Image (cartoon, rainbow, N blue to C red; front, side, top):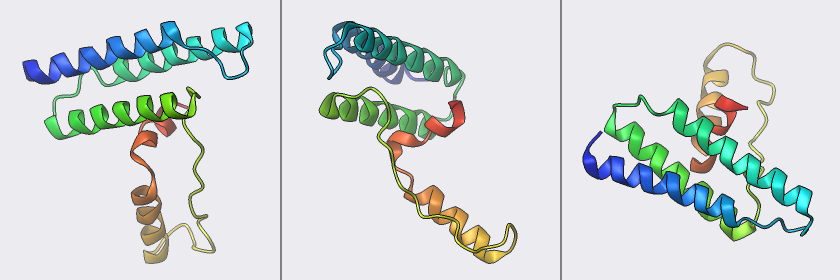
Length: 122
C-alpha cells in the first residue's frame, strides 16, 4: 500500500469513528442512538480488519470507494445501515447452464458499490 493510500484509508477510518461519536438516531431515543453508534463502530472494525491485508491497488481503490459511498449515504439518509436494494429474482433459470450464468452475472453487475462487502460479512 502506498503512503498516500494508507493516509487515505486511515483518514476514512478516523472519519467513521468521528461520525459514530456524533451520531444521533432519527427517532431521538437514546437506546436507538447507542445501538446505531455501536453498529457503525462494529461495521467499520469488521470491514477494515477484513481488508487490512489487501495488496492489489485496484481492490483497495474499490474498497475506498465503497467506504466513501456508504458514509455519504449514511449521512444523507441518516441511517447507518446499508439501504435495501431490490435485485431481479433468479427467475426460472436452472442452477446450471448459460441462462443461470447470465442471470448471476447481471445480479453481480447490478449490485451498487456500497453493498459489495455487505453480503460477505452478514
